Image 1: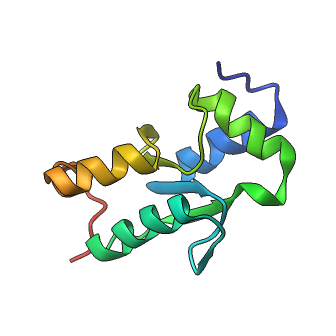
Image 2: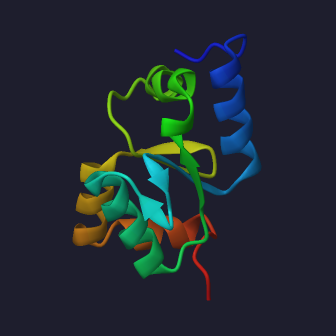
Length: 112
């Protein structure tokens, strides 16, 4: 449940509001620190999506906060236009089934 009095939730809400595509991940896009984060980065890069990566390893409160913010237990977590899309498995399944690209195009976040 989102609690904007919680500093990590307030940070997450502002980040998601200010950036069209946000990936809360372990590491940074240039150097993911887990395979699941690396997979989502590769998918977004392959599709040509401009996104902001937020390293949850830099702050334990943020790492815990993102899980309660989305009510989703795992990291990475992808947000598009403020909406939680899912973690690695969901993003991979949507990419493989062909659902992800049209969703991103519909939201106006694909380059070119």
